[in-house]
Length: 226
Image 1 (tube, one colour):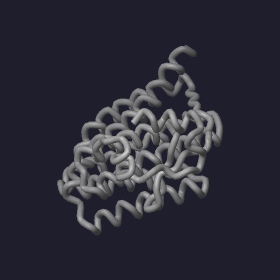
Image 2: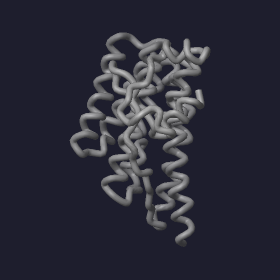
Image 3: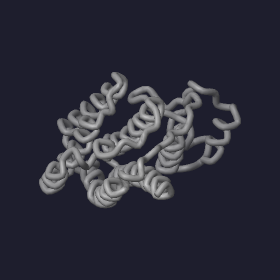
């Protein structure tokens, strides 16, 4: 599936062009649905494509990379954020897997509403931290294990990193970051919608690991200023 990336970077697939369906790609390349989804996930994480719910996956227009800037005095706070993200990776990956296996139709609808509200907040210029929290909380609730939402609700909004530390040099960086989060959330939702526990856990781990790595990089850059 490396060919997809090469076609996009080489211009064979143009910005705005819709990718073939999963079935078409499975048939063309002789691979499983899981391989196709993982390939699309990597393209989304790289910012090469975006998925529109119920419509399809499209080649992204070029966008500048997200740049982070952190004041050195914020390092203790960032270290605390990193610790929370490490905790969330193990907790929420399992919660997402259980949600994919156990969610009810009502819980799936609530999760979709939370994701739509997050994307609405993004389009209206907000950072979506509250709706981001609600999205993750809905997943915890859909796990069918009351301890997951209890633990997540206990920590509350501080579990959302950007409520603790500002890392963005510009409004454009903030917008690019939020767009990236939206794509990652769509991947998680899609796996839960399809009832695929392994894929849901994988996408949740990717999502939170990406957040951890972005914050760790910011922390290392700030440490060099000391």
